[in-house]
Image (cartoon, rainbow, N blue to C red; front, side):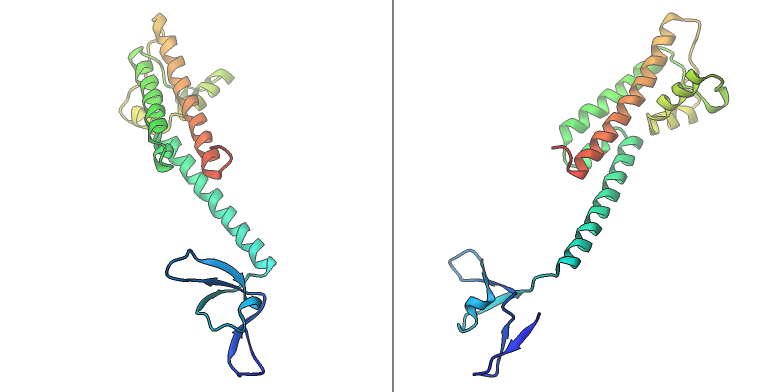
Length: 188
């Protein structure tokens, strides 16, 4: 790769395996092989081809960076419902997810639903309820810090409220998985 001198003029010409982009004032840039333009005196911008090994390393690095970005966006969506959609410029879907998750969570609190705590866990269903509540992200943490979510087990609607709280967390986790798939390009 690189430039090789010509025998006739002694000036450097592009390697025949490189690409040249011709720029003229009235045309779009077009790509041509350097071998076809060696003898002409046309101004050209030269782009050399990368070896196949460098392209695969570069593609692997890009895939790793895209995966890291997708994971960070998914974590942001878990912490703040709908945020990942806003970061991906899908504002309507982000607003719908934010309203749905936060609405279900607030409605569950209004129905006096119980947020599970780590100290109250005993059986398998309590663990699953705690995981469902934890999936609500910052809504769960803020409510626990403010002392909310004690619930009222003696009312009929308290059980419904607990179900709403768990369901809002599960919906938030589904949204985070969807955002990750969109960021990875698996879904449009």
